[in-house]
Length: 315
Ligand code: NAD
Ligand code: SER
Image (cartoon, rainbow, N blue to C red; front, side):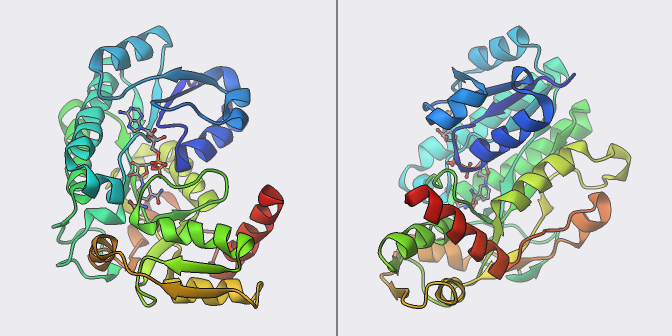
């Protein structure tokens, strides 16, 4: 039986991943951990323990006590917060990851290591970004994501640790707010569209970035972890993509449902510079081929469901 530890489970992805895994494996087999308290909904379905991933002793004791054999490592500092505090981003994203890989080696755990569109940089081809290409990111977050990809590969090749991962695009969801990233506008815009019928965006109107709706992100995460290892040539850092969209494109899709919605722009230069260095659309052929990846939501189906779910949540 799987005994699953989720780090950073109170975050944007961790919350919905936990809900999915509790449904699939039963709450007694799911161990949610984070630095911060989760919301009520999560506390009701799954045990919670405060666990700082940068504390190696705590991480080892937790895995040992609870007989963990699978880890979804979601604890991280995201791009915008990371530019405000690069030292913290390095500490959590690198030392935290190192502890998770070390404990996975010692206790023979399978481990999911998320990477990001942020692992690319200005010299990378922005459109149809290949799986294997130049990676020279310019944010501290991006630097830690490339290093994390390499470290995960190293632990597999050197120690046989079953480390797997994807490069998520910006994730759009309605359950938990995003935690300080450059793609956060693509979630905020929905809340403001419902509450105020207008939104001021911190990115330029034509900045196309790769995005994905949360159910597809969860499907990719769990499908990869359950894929037959014999089919995996890459294992880590698979490009996955679904919805390449700009702020204007997203606003136009929202206007189809809320015609009075308006958007204007007040550019944040730090976030804009980060966005300009990221792919607008990754080539995910390798993920499709090696483990059957395919998204279910496009722009219009995602926007429709986001607005429906948030209408209920905010009413
Ligand atoms: P998030 O910021 O919403 O959640 C991260 C969680 O980690 C938070 O709940 C935070 O409290 C926790 N945390 C921070 N420091 C910690 C520590 N020292 N110990 C334990 N917990 C700590 O992030 P997310 O969006 O859920 O991202 C999950 C993973 O997916 C990250 O690796 C992120 O880089 C990656 N990713 C996310 C996106 C996205 O759009 N959400 C896109 C690409 C990649
Ligand atoms: N959504 C993330 C961020 O903006 C991308 O990794 O930081």
